[in-house]
Length: 500
Image (cartoon, rainbow, N blue to C red):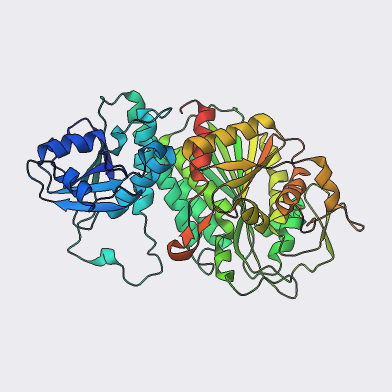
């Protein structure tokens, strides 16, 4: 665990194992880099002039034994073009800096929070630097027999000082705690998402909820088993789990940070721990990525952990319907009709559209908590990946104010969402000759019709839906769970609680 401190020391007086400063792409040094450069005989400026340091965003250069400094190392981080530097690039620079700190560095002084930006306070810069540093240091090791951290000569990074030109105030102190909480919660979400499906089953997620309840007095949990769900009439959810040997779980976590009786905000996350598509079997290519189909549920875990870590003064309910979706003799078949907990019937035209089947019953169940607002989070549609790619989560809502809150939280946290329409015009695509609705509405507007389906179960609630199919995990060389949208969710909750 990294310890974070606030500091107003000058970089030249900092005796950390490594100090971090920024340089822009045109060779201009940040203010702290300039101060440091003046002390060390303008070594950094010379390297920039020679082209050895180009200031390209996220690139880093480790310099050793610069004269006049107490620290033996200086890590220079590229900030990109100064005219384009802003919150998103600041986050990237902070993450790149923390990632570049080697195994022989136990303490670091990060001077990036001293870089001022329009409409971003010192407290925001502190919070994001702490969160991004923790996220950057996350490594998946659970199913690896040996890791680079096993080397006994490695010195783990234990301390990061976040340096500001101005004296840190109470807001910055609070922001430090918040940043650590967000980073820790995001890493939990990433870890759950990265675990393989043979380990992270619905039962595993249920045990993780119990662990959170054991770890934090502010969190309690209830796990509904399949027989209890059957008694409640959750046949839509249970129809998905019938094809699996793993029993479904409905996981309910209650965070009590506000007053007794205060209406909670509810987060409902899709917890499909592996999705083969059922009888409507997915193609084999990239099917391994379907272990990430529970990242909506994982983000609920991460957000609740962050709430508990920062002791957020509000009440939050987390509901995670969890199942697998596999082909089997007892699995859903195309053309089957199932009855949801709400009493509405559903014709299952495509068994690979299972997320909405488990979510609809979870949303109906959530109504009993009388939440002031409900946000569901799900890797729901490939159509959202086509529409928005990996940059923004899809947002649909039956309430403009709630949608605006989430959009604002996304901008503040740099974990953005983009709103799509939820017009009644799209509802007719769900018409069925044999049930109250079909579970798919055809190829056109797939993200919207999926939300239209869920809207039929949230008419009595102030509700929003986040489709994170494009943002929940990274592909390619950096393949793995991204931890999104924990940043958006925690910012939304913090603003609701009046602490951001």
